Image (cartoon, rainbow, N blue to C red):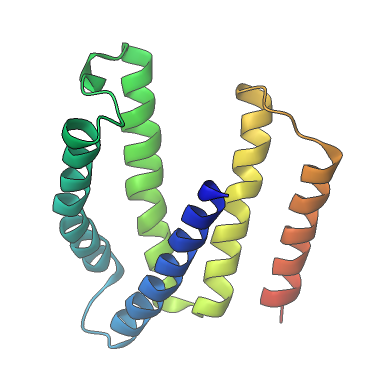
Length: 149
């Protein structure tokens, strides 16, 4: 149950955060790249503080992550940092800048788990059951209904 509650908290935070972001972008005084840069700049000290607590205080994470093998560090830097952390946020904020939040958010946040589930099946050999496949198709179908004209 804890992972689901954490996911619910993340979804609530993203929903509120993107509402503020859309309202800021709507003013025309701040562009999407600036919004991403400010978001990242504000988030970074909080994230490093959380890392410090998790590693040094709670001992809930490995302290020597930087000693991981090259492939692991490349996946972290390129996949998580550049693709998800930079490119995805730039694309998302650019879409949010010109599109309706009620259409952009569902597309981005439904496509992400669908792609992740398929890639996890192919590369990580996670099971892709009929139930998961039906769920993915249902979610994507719902997004088409929600966002179509």
